[in-house]
Image (cartoon, rainbow, N blue to C red; front, side, top):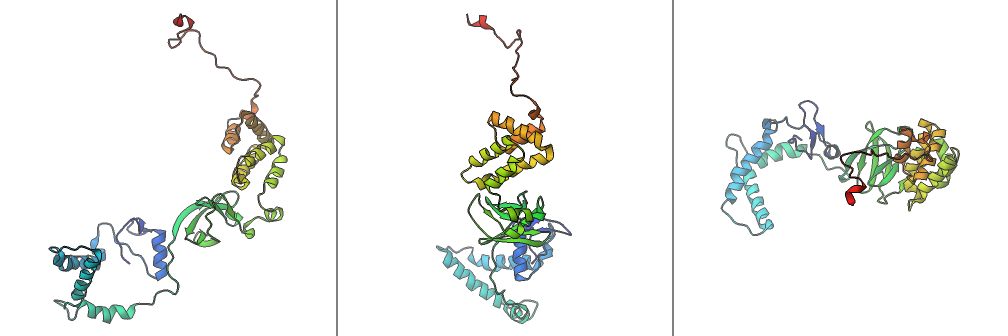
Length: 304
């Protein structure tokens, strides 16, 4: 196929290595054809198409320019009749007609359609989270844990979700529309996780208790704030993982401060650790001192 550089077919035009839309490429591979887009502003790269458009404009549209149609079916029937006449019309400089050339050259070279019909699929890029799942429309699908933090290509159809890494399929799942839920294959889990089971609230709480009571209380608070505890598992994993970067002692202090302030999100804990607020005492509030003399301060005498 030699198409234009339409956005639905070509993501990025290039003289040597054009970037073909994955969905368009998927369809081409299904039917066993190659996509060779024309160069930008080079209509002669697809001369047969341009010539075909010119012939249709001159021969079919010219016949219809003075006619009025009152339904799409009537218009299509007229175009079909004119198209048959055009294909049977003898060439001016060559023997035969378009119909005869098709029967002699093109039709014998045609291959049968694939046994399975083409299934429309959309592609997106997704990064694997620390819980070895990727998010697709609010649902989480597992991939092999060795791909954590890797970027994958995800192929999404009405029935399936397939994940690819460097062109190789690494996971395939039946598509689910239950937002906030997980679809996990046990073989994708690390050995330690398979032995301990899924990321249950009890397991997260046990892990947090190893750091300290404040961390355990904060994790239980985060889990209790969601209708489904599984929806908070990512936030809990992120909070507990901060202990590896900053140390469990600082994480415990940060959780203690967050509980006092009533801020339980991952971003709050990370901000406390980043700005070393866990070292400050909450018993000594910092009061803002105002100057006694300032142009913007009227003073009590103003209101008398």
